[in-house]
Length: 78
Image (cartoon, rainbow, N blue to C red):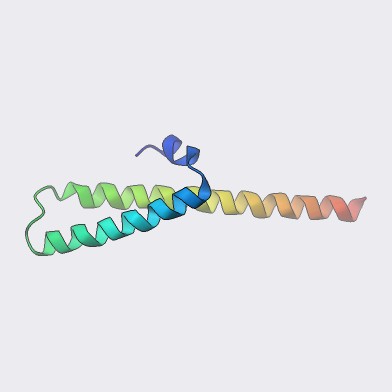
C-alpha cells in the first residue's frame, strides 16, 4: 500500500484498518510457525504497511496538537 493512499483514508477508518492488519499479521505468524506460509515476504510487507499507517496517524495527531497550540497562543496574544 502506498503512503499516498493511506493519507487519503479518514482517521477512524485508518484505525479500523490497522486493527484488521494486526489480526492478519497474527494469522500469518501462526501460519509461518506451522510451516503453512509459502510466501514469507507477506510478513515483511504487512509489517511495513502497518508502520506506514501508524506513521500517518502520528503525523495527524502531531499536526492537531500543533494547531491547538497555535490557536491557544493566538488567543493569549489578542
